[in-house]
Each structure stands twice: as C-alpha cells, then as structure tokens.
Amino acid sequence: MPTPKFHHPRRRSCHRDLGRRYSRSGRSEGFTLIEVLIVVVIIAILMAILALSGSGILTRHRLNIAQDEVYRGIQMAQRQAQQQRQDWQFSIRDLNPPVQWAVHPMSTLPADAVWHNIDPRVRLDPESTLALAGGVRRVRFNYRGAVRNPPLGRVTLSSRDGGRLKRCVFVSTLLGALRKSTEKPTPREGKYCY
Image (cartoon, rainbow, N blue to C red; front, side, top):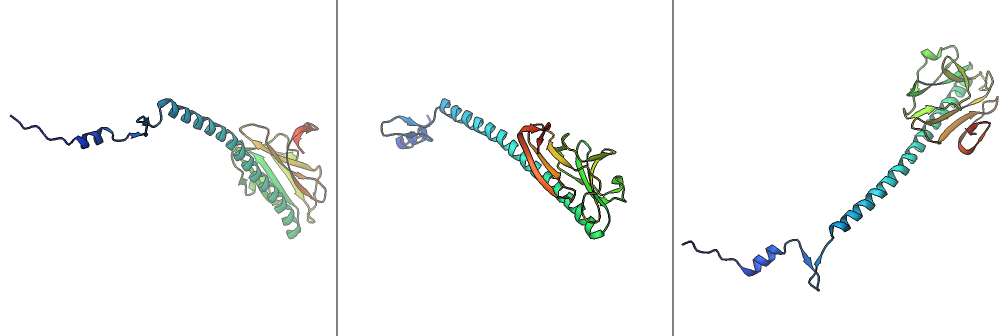
C-alpha cells in the first residue's frame, strides 16, 4: 500500500489563493468583467475621437508643407529671373497624383524642366487661377522679378480626401508680391481661399 504524500496545510491555502487579494472584510478585490469591458469601450471611443481629429491635423500639416513648397518655388523663380537677368517661370501641374512644380527659364519647355513632387495626398484645387497652358499652370517673371504676363492669380491646394481645408499662394501684384492664405468660412466670388 502506497504511503500518502504529506501536504502542508499552509502551503495548500497559499496555492489556492494565488493571484487573489482579500480586503479586511474578507471580500475578493479586483475588477469584474463588466468593469473591464466598460473601460475598454471608453478607451476605444477616445481613440476614435483622437483618430478623427488627428487626421484633420495631419491634413492641415500636409497642406501647410505643400503651400510652403509652392511659395518657395515661386520665390525661387523670381530670384532666378533677377540673378540670371532673364525671364523665368514657375510651373505647377496635377498628374492626379502627384502635384508637381518646377522652376525653369522661359526658354526651357515645361516638359524638359526638373519637376518636384508634392505629397500625393494633396491636389491642385479648381480654385487655382494662374495662367493655364497645356495642362500646366504658370507664372512668369521678367529680369527685374516682376510678373511678365498678367493676369495675376493663385495656386490653391486641397486634400484628395475631400474636406474644406485649403491653402493658397497668391501672386498679388505686377511687381511679384506674394502672399499666403487659408480657407475662409464664406466664399468671395465663389472661392473659399482668399
């Protein structure tokens, strides 16, 4: 007959109580399944709200970067015209996606220019009013840095995902003055970026 194994009474109670805590009143402490589920649902709701507001922040950031690129590109064309003492052109096109821009002498065809890509989630908005020729919008500067051929105009950028956010760059005087703007709540002459 086999001999029974000896079990220490204190050890058995420790094993049974492993992972549980008891309050002074003797009740088990911890979270119920319902409490855990409520916390998970609250966290999920907060994450959804954060994701929605975060996507707006990211879109705004992308548009601001694209606006800065266009602004610097137009300034570069103006500076090159003054430094090289010849006519230069800023060109921009939407290949759906990406939007591309180039700075080149007017003697260079836009097709032969070096094009720079803008974030593929940004599009050239229909509110853009720079002169259009062959699918390329452009502004030309003479050797003094002044706009060579009016009309003046704007480049308006918006998100390919939709929404009302817009960023624009204006060539606002014949002398080549530039300014930036953002979307407004009400349109002026049918345009929201002015």
